[in-house]
Length: 390
Ligand SMILES: [Fe+2]
Ligand SMILES: [Fe+2]
Image 1 (spheres, rainbow, N blue to C red):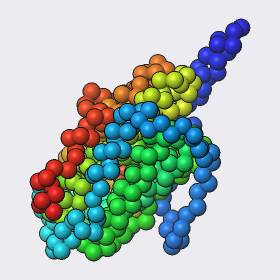
Image 2 (cartoon, rainbow, N blue to C red; image 1 turned 180 degrees about the horizontal axis):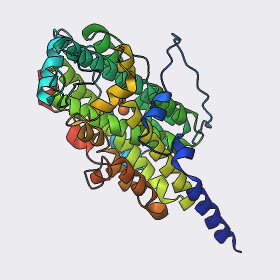
Image 3 (cartoon, rainbow, N blue to C red; image 1 turned 45 degrees about the horizontal axis):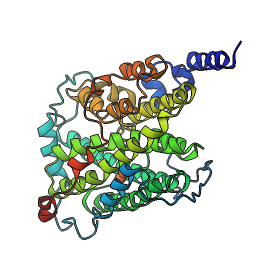
Image 4 (cartoon, helix red, strand yellow; image 1 turned 135 degrees about the horizontal axis):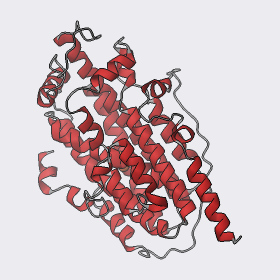
């Protein structure tokens, strides 16, 4: 038997063994009971330590521009910095309840018009007050998770500065670290001064961030953060930016998105080169990582902590809300950047279309031919008008 033949056998066995049970701890990706078994335990701790197992890499090759697409991104980044304290209209008065009502009306959700029959359900006795409270809590939850995700990006990108072997990538990543500090800062300020409460980091999001930080392979940080977490953030911010009627949040999201599109591009442009040189077995590990990350992010959006805080039966409430009109479309839409970027990286179809089949199972494959983000960041750049209206 040849060595190649042996390697192929090992890979086949690995693919065979990669069951959902093995990867995400449950056979059915939609098994709500198992999803909810992973829940946030808030022990009131202020810090959380995670072991970073990656080597720190120095490079003595200082040739700037050896990777022209990364150099271009770096130069663009240097002139795109904004100041979270002075460039946003923080003096805007925000009436959170009024904003929530306007959003719920625009989406046809909440306020008793959730589109499903509440008779015989835990929502039976809900009136305007409870639907409004749900909207307020959901907004506090959503913005809190964005803030935690932004800190994840801050930490992960600092890790990339240390671990990536290319000088152009170290340069670019250093500018992203500054961007992410600004993002954490503005989301935290918005929560503290305009909204009405914080939520601790969601357990599914934290598991994903821990996986990314603890992985020893430098490219996994990019895949987990730039491609998956930031790809999802870019889609979610875009949706929220389109929906919200609150001018300060709209402006804040516009600014953050202009950076975020560059970050996703950084992931696509860096990994595109690296993945070309990987074997099927190595690509299979990346495919699995992408799938696990996708499932964790989908689980997180069930916002189980909101139902707990509202004193509602969590599983039953989620099952009902899942039936609301637009819900499925919203959940799928979160993957509208991730799927085309995975395709661009060649991750969908290697190993007998392994990731394509997983994305089919998650109901998100329809985005595969949407615009990928390798060049799209140019369209997201701030214009003179964006800056003037701030
Ligand atoms: Fe960010
Ligand atoms: Fe980012």
